[in-house]
Length: 220
Ligand code: DC
Image (cartoon, rainbow, N blue to C red; front, side):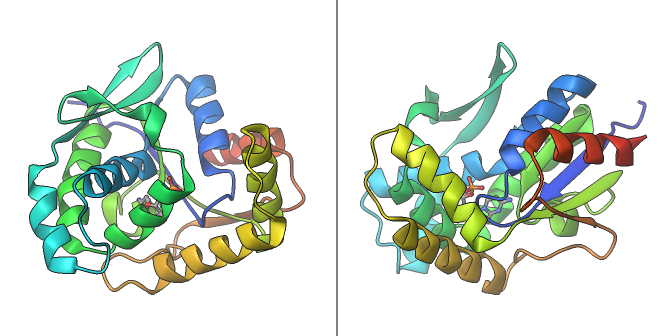
């Protein structure tokens, strides 16, 4: 079997990973794998089952009963939670915050990392997340650490939420982002950090197209 080509994009919340990863996948005809959506689906399962986010043992136990898989429909990643398409419920602040907490539990990560590695072994992928270059795909062909200032990231999320009718202030959103980064970077198991062989891209003063171009030029 020929080797599949893997691009790993890691970075903090709101850096623009999914926007650019999707465009890169489209341009190169690769599959986009959104690993955050898998952690969010697991979080949704825990919320539905009223698992206490502070109870690590309960999370470790409950996650055994969440079967998460993905499918592609018209090029879009669809996350199935126990057979049901849950895409429409994943992108809320509540689910994102739960995902940031529950993703620190090793049992949750081991389960999802296995799925991620299987996908990357069988297809050319652009995979985004927090630990792709450092842990999931240490041999990825190209590794990017995509970041931006917390203010810029908060501004982007603010606009996104406002479009959906949200009414949270920019300061509140920035506080949330800073707190989420702190959790993602300080957990013990596979924390968010830049891999030694990753290229740092700061998107604070770049458009999405510029970031896409830069990453594609690194792949050539
Ligand atoms: O990228 P996102 O906002 O959809 O991710 C939601 C949470 O999932 C994030 O706070 C941390 C966690 N996550 C992770 O721990 N590892 C990944 N590879 C992707 C996401």
